[in-house]
Image (cartoon, rainbow, N blue to C red; front, side, top):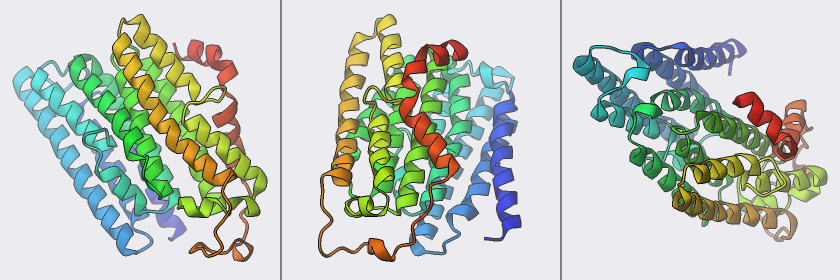
Length: 348
């Protein structure tokens, strides 16, 4: 892609998210979401592969539907209540419609079916942008509108997402689909406490972005998109393969790694709010996610590469050098648990 075109698209991505962050008017927030969508579509379709074009088309249709629902809900709220303020979605119908549209936009279950298919059809680099940066603007709107949304709707979306995110990833062999289901499960944890403790949602979001970025960068470095190619990764980069295991276990929320921090804080908050049953269910669903991360770790460390493989042979693949970003995100994805009190104090 032309560097000038790429620069314009990346600037537009930043502009769209920033516009949504700064707006208190629904029309401005909607414009920011639309700029975001239009900016990432050329990045998704740049390979001109049928799967990439199919994924881009699906993504565009889903995002356009969600944006139309948001605009309709905002217009209905202005018609009923006479104002366009994001924090004043006072009518239950419009607030439920807005939350449903935002859930569709980021891929919360049961509105998640597009996310694994879209992520599977694009490159790892574009998938990284879709899994991290593209979640920021809708989640900012969810946090702002959560106080006016019925708690039952938020809890249902959250528990469905953690269940589907754990269950859906169990029988997958494609790494991008596994990371998509991981994204769905993590979003469920974030949504669950968005009403009672929005600072926990922000901590969980930052932690998720750090861990997912590290995972995508590592998979891109060892050039793996399927579980079968993980078995030969140790011949290319032994140290990086060992660190990949730690990052995957951190995504699963295993102590003493960084991923344990948001789960621990969220379960503690649910217990303080008297929601013991919800805390128990969501803790059990975390075991489902942990299982398929352990499966990936097993493929990385304890599995020999088969004699005949469809993957590119390791000795003919040019080795990519680890970058500063990869090193930084790997350290943050594995070593931040001891400074949890500091992070919690800064965020609250």
